[in-house]
Length: 101
Image 1 (cartoon, rainbow, N blue to C red):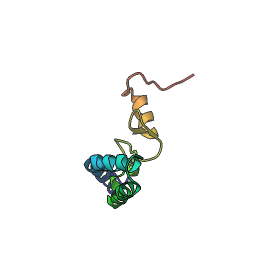
Image 2 (cartoon, rainbow, N blue to C red):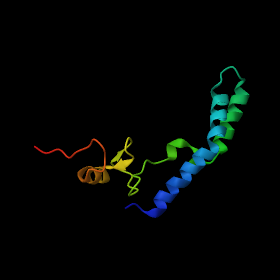
Image 3 (cartoon, rainbow, N blue to C red):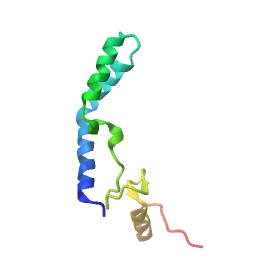
Image 4 (cartoon, rainbow, N blue to C red):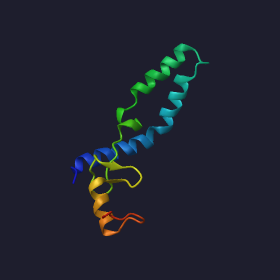
C-alpha cells in the first residue's frame, strides 16, 4: 500500500491539471503560432511559466486504483502487476486466466 500522502498529492495534481487545462492550451497555441510577432509569443511563454508546475499533465503519476502503487502499472486496467495477478487468479478480470502447463 502506497503512502496516503503520495496518493493524495497525485489526486491534487489531477484536479489542478483539469482546472488549468484550457489556460495552458490557449497559451501553448499562442506561443507556437509562428504568424504572431516574437514579442507576443515570448509573453505567452512567460505566462505559461508562471502557471503552477503541478498544472502540467506530465506531473501526474500513474497509480494503481486499489493499492496506489506507482510501479509495475498496466494502463489498460489501471492496476499494478501484483493486483493484476491476484484478481486474475480469482477470476475477477473477464477473459483473463492464469496460465498453467
